[in-house]
Image 1 (cartoon, rainbow, N blue to C red):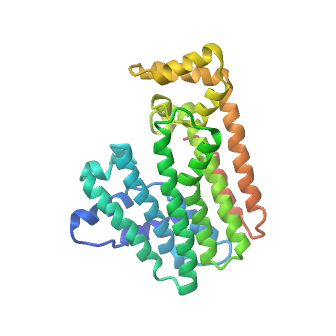
Image 2 (cartoon, helix red, strand yellow):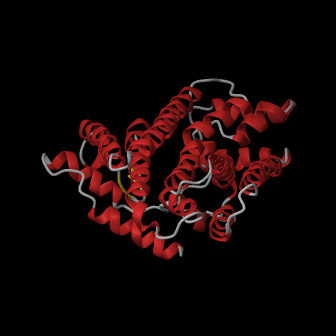
Image 3 (cartoon, rainbow, N blue to C red):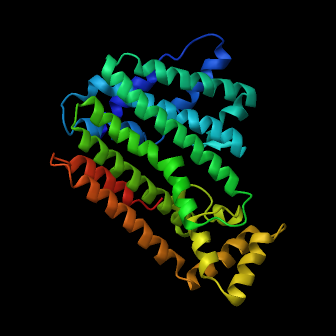
Length: 319
């Protein structure tokens, strides 16, 4: 089933026409959309829809609209992060330029609305209301993430709210969209959205953990990158809350260091995390959110085996 859905999504992406002239405005959209990726969000749309109705081919274009929005956020995030690579290839602002990336991202968002316009009246209103709420929250989350870079203290609650907004709500909307398009009962639309949000928070916390503890060969990017950048992750927040005496002095020393050996910093901070059992504390929080998510899903009586299997496979990933 998943392979069939992926093929439907890739076919829609390959043939989608975003516009033609000027070429420099529209080529970056096609370029970014065809770079690949997990296609997690459009798959969730189709999986949620298939709980209630057959033939998800009818709604693939709406699933791809969610993927287009996700890639719009990546195009602009890469500019803000000054990221040179996306999925192993040059980012749009590097391949073209910053101004082109801003404009291409803007028109990409406009095209997302175009992709929803073929929905019938009442459904269009419901989808756009949910989408607009989600889109605004994603922007709020990104702004909080940027503000955290210059804050000396970020609480666990603030961090969880930031990742809920920046990452998790779009997973929730993806599932909610599939349910709306399938005419699912309102309470089940909400249950699927909450499932996506809680699972999404768990996924981000797992990313935090893998950034420090993943196998180098499997991870696909530099292990310890968050430590090197002093990124306010759950692991650092827990460590700053738990460390005392010499451990706290050592942690602060590495956080405040302007010049340092990257390998030494990662090794030293990881050693502090180990002594404070930060990995175990983080894993407990991850499990709490995954459990909350599956409790949301348990309220739905439909055959959920494909959605459950897909989610559990993502949960078990090591990279």
